[in-house]
Length: 207
Figure 1 (tube, rainbow, N blue to C red):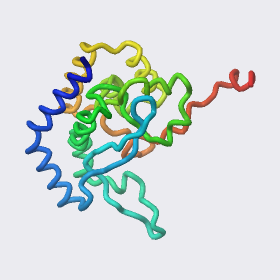
Figure 2: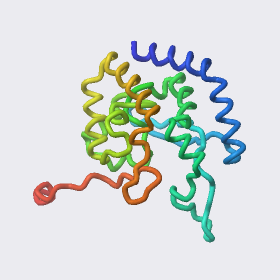
Figure 3: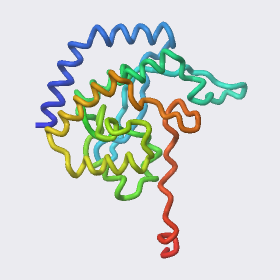
């Protein structure tokens, strides 16, 4: 039922939102240049990788040594607007249509995080990743990584069709209100990288 619902909603959304998608694509091309789409390998169901599609929101700015500048310096006001309104996520509807993602589920993160998860945290990959999820409507980018993963795993264990519907409705209100969109801790334009969950001292002593 969930997969059928995802497919039907994604198909209708792609058709209905086609004019919006076309306008956003044109604006990205004019303001940020080519490529219009950001493509990146992300882990999906059971950790299998797929190519995530998003609208590009950052410039390809580098320093004198050819290294990419910090996110805050590469993310222009137009890019911030795309992210705060979640317009950059619209191409992910294609990922949903292909069965690589769901409308609701844990957000697909970076492949390099896979070896950093604890066994419990890794259970977030027991379901398809989502365009939105329970963690996104409960704090979005302002949660710690551990809090986010705990919410993701709780969703995996307790998900229902009605819960998904509630999350979708709450997502709409979150986006319209632009709540908890950017992680400002440490001056980051995006959420800081996950470097692993610290092992408690008592656990280290048992090793």
